[in-house]
Length: 200
Image 1: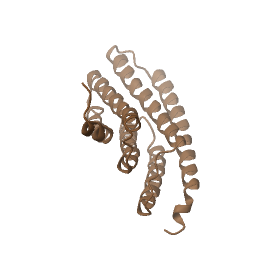
Image 2 (image 1 turned 180 degrees about the vertical axis):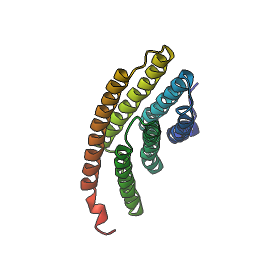
Image 3 (image 1 turned 90 degrees about the vertical axis):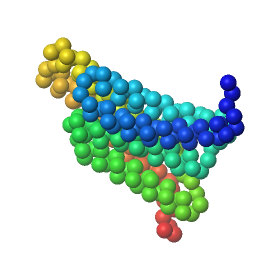
Image 4 (image 1 turned 60 degrees about the horizontal axis):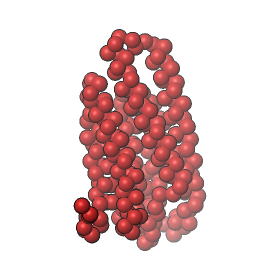
């Protein structure tokens, strides 16, 4: 059954809002004990990530790209990614200082977008920013898969300090790459749009 005009019109932004809602539910299940809750949290994050792909796809396909969508979509991405990273900090999987740097970067870019908005301009996500988001998503997916693996291994009483050490090293390596891309893309965005601060 084909969609009506109004369904097409509100679908992209509806998917973006759904991503925020799914993030809140994800934050509940990621802290619940047990393999089932961890797998469900992984599924929720996967579904939320899919909405990021399809909202833009539908907006371009039906020519429904809006200023509201350009502004809300990057914010929804930040809520999803930062929600996951903050959960990992609470679970002591990654250090807080790394997430603080990511939050500072995202806050600065959001500030730039708000300044641009006051001047009647909407700054959409750039290619470097999309690569940054992709690297963050991949890192989060791998950490979630590690949590599922850990629950399975613990259930079979096979978990030991050696596995934990290698896992910790792998997570830190991934986070270091992600952090570097996050900082570099943020600096590139600020330099490219520095003219917005001249009259601020």
